[in-house]
Image (cartoon, rainbow, N blue to C red; front, top):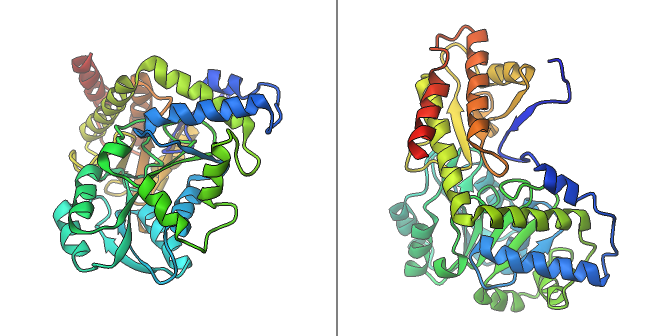
Length: 384
């Protein structure tokens, strides 16, 4: 590569940062307890309501998305209470590990990786555990590229139990439709480094009144992750602990970008990117991990082929300046994943497919050079 500093990042997070967001984050530092910071915190929280689809006031945590998952677990569940975690991949597993770490009673609904959870499967499972207090879902399972039918699953929970519903939306909020209030989600979570187009370091949560009432009854809560403390501070346009001011300045600009594009157009763009990626990959004879029905608009997972492993392909792609993600846990070396969320457009998909064709050719995989690009272009042509 002639330019060592130049490469294309197409992993499912962290994602590329738009230059105008980078510039916003270079603003001179302000005091985190100043009136300017209070105005920034209030504005960011207010404008995140649109992303979440809620009238609740989203919380701003200086931490990773995983910390917000842990916050949901430790604030909602009390000792000896029961929870269901629907596991459709590595990040569902992470939710389950958090529940287990705190010693709560875990009922794990394991779904084969690459498949979404079926509402009927959940129905039969939840009826077996009448004392469950909380059900945890992953909206988009980053490790497999699955988008779970979250509205249908939530309806099942509310029809057959009184449990609260917590949804991990880290790898899709800001790219997909979210109607937290209308869908009766009790806690919805996302992070900064995916579709929100920011560096890692912020997590966002919105909490229903039903969940707040449950937390008030819980005498054992985290210190740093005490969500009641965040709520109390936010009422005063502040945070309980030092906020990441530079990231919040970037968040304000990211919200500007989402507003300028129009959120319906943001959602439509991500569906186009999904269709282009899947069409291009299929035209090259590669096997997609998920069905069209279960596929996420933010990440696509693809199996390696006969005689070659995905990690070999990723190595050659990296030499070409294209970075894609590998598989996780038992899928390590078996799949590769292309992220197409946030600061990503149709030309980016054309570029990654072109690089994929070049890498496959270098590996002596028999493909029709240009077939993937052509298939994606045809999808794009028909869309516009």
